[in-house]
Length: 190
Ligand code: HEC
Image (tube, rainbow, N blue to C red; front, side):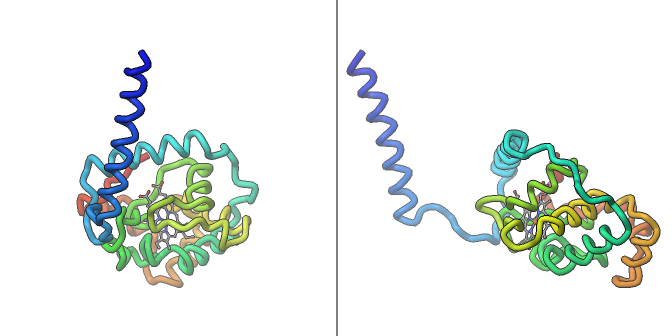
């Protein structure tokens, strides 16, 4: 029995050392301009979802979804997020193919997650990706305004749609139901 346990421990240590050597000798790819293979994307995505399920509090938005709050959310989005997640004139982000994993194009392909999920993703970011933890940069209120805006992209009240159209020249209504061409890299997930 002692021999068996020692064998297991030595095997684990050996695998660990091999992994370290592979990394230290530069065998792991580090470029961000590659497309993650489907299996890697799948494993990473379900791990991310499972981690959120486990860690994210089921918080509900403390702010009312007033026109003013949604318009603030829209401005905050334009200033901080559009560079990666796509602009309100319905163009994909310039950086769509420049990150590994690629940033989801939220304006073209709105999220269908609950608010607690979106809020948690914005607040804490996603480790080893380009997604920053915005709680280090924005006020708590602003995180909730962004959450309110992003979770209602397809059902914004008329005054907010009007503001959108004024600022970006395109009405969000006119884009409803249009499919964003997927490039194979980021199929939407829940
Ligand atoms: C520098 C690029 C970058 C910026 C800026 C950025 N994000 Fe992200 N974001 C990402 C990437 C990359 C991912 C995908 C992470 C992954 O694949 O796990 C992501 C993921 C997300 C998700 C999770 C989507 C899902 O399907 O669960 C949300 C929500 C999100 N971002 C919101 C925002 C908001 C709101 C802002 C602005 C306050 C923002 N992001 C700014 C790169 C960015």
